[in-house]
Image 1 (spheres, rainbow, N blue to C red):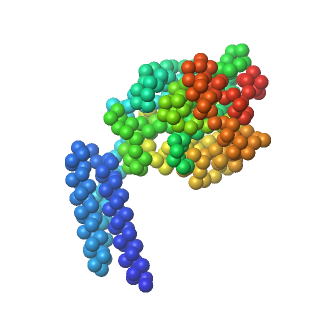
Image 2: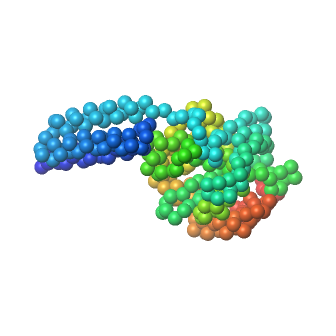
Image 3: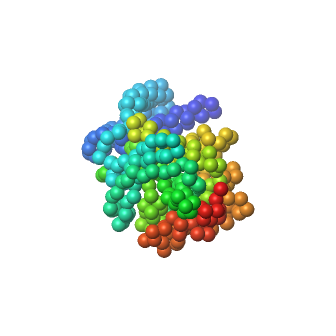
Length: 341
């Protein structure tokens, strides 16, 4: 019984190693498509030989063969380094960078595109200044496109204007930094195919792109943070974006994505935050924040989700100069900045 169990484990390990190696080579090997296919075919053939020997009762030969094969693969894999200067897609061409002088934050490369379609836009990058003494809100946008539990997360910071009313907003998005010719693949995100990017954008860019252009469903939640924690979260995002500018990282579909990166920052600010499966299934993130007391009190999660659905309002306010104000009407926890603390 024990021998049969060990034989089963060996066969499973051989199968998994063969599959993982084929995917890694297929997504990351720097060869033309024909060359990649040939190498992958060779890898699968070798793995198939070890698996066939294992099915016939051999143990040592397939084990040693796969160990040698995987060791060679890992030498190559460990040598892969994220790139800093490539021909990036226009929407992720620049990372958010900034500097703080006193209470005034200057952000460079704030994206303010006018999207004509999901793939075409009038590009515009700006430098903007923000007075951190006027930082008044943090909002969580969840954008979903029909896949259960899967969504994209935006973190938006709101500022008072000089009269104490509705001011400017800047949204941060953790993105896949694709090359100009690349399309996003969730599978490729497991295999070092993309770099990681933190983008700062005007809400009329970041939100309208998802609700009005890509026809995604966008829900807005007001996050309850103290003024000090708002400031710390904003500066943590700016600092991390600046670090990525000089020390690029690979994107990873699970461990380095739009939710896990923000969670890591929040964990440095708020003690006691625990790991949870909802940090991996980003569409469930509001439930995690709700359970930790981070959303507006006095409402159920279902009510916050229903009242925070801004999709239709965003589409009606597509050309409105006060787009950010329009989409927030009726969202729990939102009222005029003039009445905030």
